[in-house]
Amino acid sequence: MFSYRHAFHAGNHADVIKHLTLIATLQHLQQKEGGITIVDTHAGAGLYRLDGDYSETGGEAQDGIFKLLSQLDEAAAKKDAKPIPEALQAYLDMIASFNPNGQAKFYPGSPFILHAMLRKDARDKLRLFELHPTDSKALASNVAQLDAGRSIMIAREDGFESLKKMLPPPPSATGSKRAMVLMDPSYEIKSDYGKVAANIQDCLKRFATGTYLVWYPIIPRPEAHDLPKRLRTLSNQAQKPWINLTLSIGRNTDGTTAGLAASGMFVVNAPFTLKDKLREAMEVVGLRWRGVRVIAGQLSIVKSCVEWCHSKARIVSLNTNLHASQFVQKRFSWRRIGISIRNLHLRGIRDDLTNSP
Image 1 (cartoon, rainbow, N blue to C red):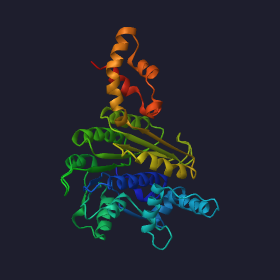
Image 2 (cartoon, rainbow, N blue to C red; image 1 turned 120 degrees about the vertical axis):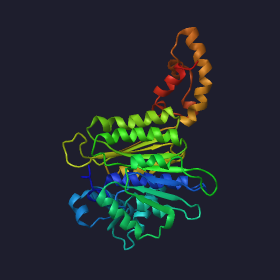
Image 3 (cartoon, one colour; image 1 turned 135 degrees about the horizontal axis):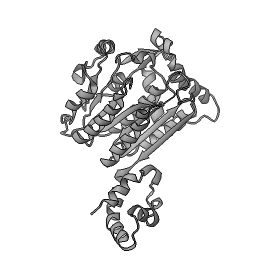
Image 4 (cartoon, helix red, strand yellow; image 1 turned 135 degrees about the vertical axis):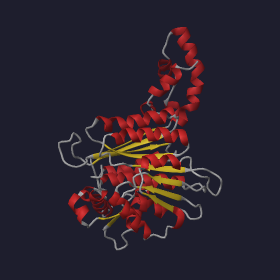
């Protein structure tokens, strides 16, 4: 159960997509004044050396942050160099802040990234959970070096179980309740996939307005393949917008090559403008690796359209025996309202229309 140590994988391509998305999401949420309760269910050690024994043994940073930095430097040297997108620049600035000498020797995990982004005036709170005995001790030791005060709480507990007592969050200084949760277990046991989906479902019941980020590996395992589909279904059922990003570094994903070849980030209740920012950033990142996908579902946009279609669909189905979804596809111009049928995943909408009284 405790065989996974993130120190062997720090700074890899999965960290790049995870932390880029994490920073961009929190930056958007912090545009509002109200304080945010931030929960990291699987915090790890918090800070890692990229020139240490663990990282050099794994060697995964070479295909991650080092490759990104190297190729961005090469691109910047060209005369027709394009500006770096805002979300990607924010990620690079965060990494640089932990390496003031200009050499990438340290890589901040999500706890240190999140601590660096806490707002004292808004009284943001960070809650960290780590069950691994070695990593939890390292996390406590690393955080002790920070001037964190009461803004950070660390507990050696199961993040899945402890998350339940964090939601709904306490009111902020302005009286509002706001929360963001990062869930990135190691998935070293199959049950983690089911626990992630179950926890997201529970989170949406306990605090529907929270923003929930899930990292997941893309590997030849049924549970891994089904997880983003389950998260999409849960988001659609709760009528929450979502974003799913995937990044592949070019190795096979069928298990014939060693190491993780691809991973994804799923954001439940994603901020409205996040999709475009991440798409711009991931287009640049994708040029450095094999492929990138950014798929978004904005069910909050289509809600009024679904309600408008209810009565029309009932009339058509009664008079002409057309299925409600056929009416939507044939008679309603999705392009006119700027929504892609592919991105909306009409299955949930079909059920909604078909089952309407």
